[in-house]
Length: 242
Image (cartoon, rainbow, N blue to C red; front, side, top):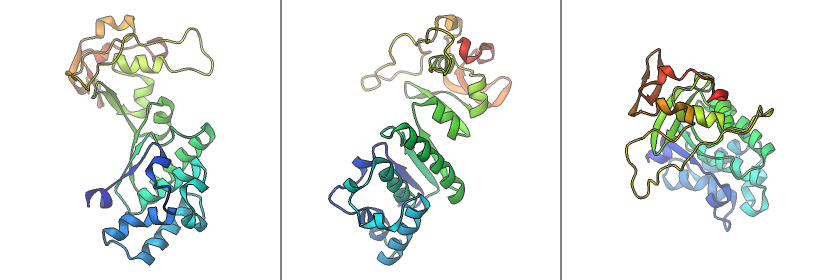
């Protein structure tokens, strides 16, 4: 019941989330009818309402997943996640399988629906630009642990962990100033052994700052900003200089 009433998931690949042999209407109404939260008629009406909310019409209820595009199918998955009126949406890289134009449409849709339905959104992504565009607060993870967290604007303007700074420096720019920075080495293999967070092999110029803390702690001058680094106040360079 926790998953149906409190938290809902938006998966990375919409085609893998739906049974290709069942109609979209069945996919949307199944969870709320099986749990007894709605009658079949109520669930169908709710599904039609949410399809309209995500920019589709009622005719999608009678279609099979193979009859709609990937972008439309991701909208269906978003509608399905909202069927139970959850408090939190978990979005696992929901734009990875989509083209750039459709990605922008889905991100704008998620932002609109979050405000309209007053739903929390936990957005998992490797795309730093997307994180900056949609997030109020950002958590940067390394080796299964949080390396840094803070308000999105502040974190991207002045990172407090060498790994965050290195990630931002390695992001392609529209007008590159020179050779793209890279992060040396490989992350640890957590399937075998995931030790406490060590400082990642960040850019060489941060060698003096590699003593990372095991847990993220508040930055000395920014209580809303946390970093797993004992010397976070000494990381003064901008991301471009990292």
